Every structure is written in C-alpha cells, then in structure tokens.
Length: 300
Figure 1 (cartoon, one colour):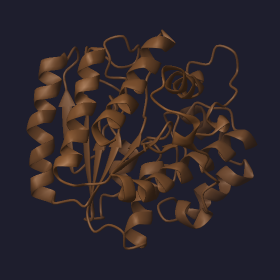
Figure 2 (tube, rainbow, N blue to C red):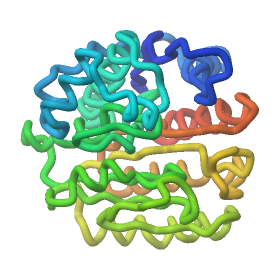
Figure 3 (cartoon, rainbow, N blue to C red):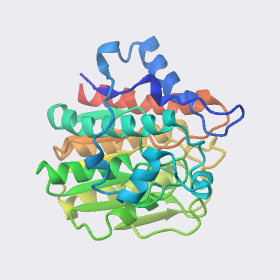
Figure 4 (cartoon, rainbow, N blue to C red):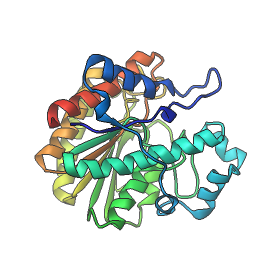
C-alpha cells in the first residue's frame, strides 16, 4: 500500500493574495480520498525532524536562526514566506516526512511526501519558498545510517535544484541531476553533477525524449541504490512561472517513466512534490494527483 506523508500543518496560513498556492497540499489529500485512489490508511503524519539531521547538511548558525526566529529579513524576503513559529514547525515536519519516506520506500519500493522538494535551500540560507532542504537532509540520513552507498537525485522541477547542487558538490556518493528551464529562476545557476537546460517553450516530445535518453544512462553509469524524485508540476504550459509548454499528460508520462526506471532497476524511490504555480488550482492539483495515481498503479 502506498504510504504518503501528510499533515494539516502542510497548509500554512499565508497573507491574503500571497502567490504561493499553499492550499494545494490540502486539496491533493482531499482529492485522492474523494476519488478513491487513497484511503486514510495511506497517509501518515510525521513528527518534527531531529535537529541532528538538519545539522548534517545545514550550518548551525542557519538552523539556530530559523529556530529562534532571527533570520535576516533580507533572507526571509528571498525565501518569500513570513517568519512565524508555525512556518518553522511546518518545515521540520515536512523534512521528517521525507526521511520517513526513505524508510518506507526500502520496504515498499516507493513512498511519497505531499510536500517537500525544497531544493533552493542551501547549507547556510534559504530562498525561493525553501528553508530546509528535505531531500538533502534525507539523503545525508541514508548515508549516515549506512542505508545507501550511492544516491541519485532526479530533480524535474522546472527550476534548477541549486541548493541541492551546492550541498553535495563535494559528496561523491550523491549524484545530483537537474533538468530545468534554461531561462528560469535561478538566473545564476549552480553546478549539479548533471544539468540539462531546457529552452523556453519546450513541449512534450522534446521534454520526454530528453528524459528518456538521460535517466537510463545515468542509472547505468552511476549504479545508485536509492532514488530521490522531485516531481514539480511547474513544467506545465499553464504554469505562470514555468516558461515550458508540457501538457498534463506529458507530465504524467514523465512520472510513469521515472517510476518504471525505479522498478526496472529495483531501486527504492522517495518522491517530494516540488513546485506548481498554475493560476488555476485545479491544474496544479490534478497534475500532482497524477503522480500519486501513477505510483499506485505501477507499484501496487
């Protein structure tokens, strides 16, 4: 049975008119239940992550600033959220959700977090709606616990996973792969182990063929024993921040291929949702729900 990390705290109350679609987390949960893809037994509520794991990849100064509410206001503007105790609780809980998913994926083949994919969080700072790097923390957890020897991060959010790239630049046991919009945020890209810059207006065929060529080759070359998948749906043509032109079905086919590669190579995979900023919440929620539907159909 597919296990999914979710807590009501995932939906943070934001000021009216805020551009981040925080409601999507609650709606994904509700839609999966409504349509019968999931029941409540599919969902589990994580506890806050232990600070020792946050400190495995983030600096002590940054973690302390987050927990004490003393983050520089300029950094909070780059992050894009108001600094509140509720926000910090949320970040710590989401991060533990991704760690929990790594344990469940080793048992079941796959586990998913309704939130996460906070790949713009650097060791010493946050930006772009990201504060703790859940994938980075969970990958370090696996290495520290001796549960993985080589990890492949498959980041298919439309924005480069710049924080994750920097976090593991000197860690050969984590290979960072980011396929993202060339002309999109961040304007100054970092260096992942493999970056694929997609031109503005990229449609289904080019996007999927690029992935079909790249991912199997990476798995053959790197021989990972664990996959992290950042499944952002901001590649959609409808996304106001994406600049690509992938259809909802193209996004679903992307998910199918990533999961098929995990199954074919007997690799446990943990999924974090990443971004999605289409003006209509329905477009975001349906594309995200497709990822859960595909996982359910292929693994269970």
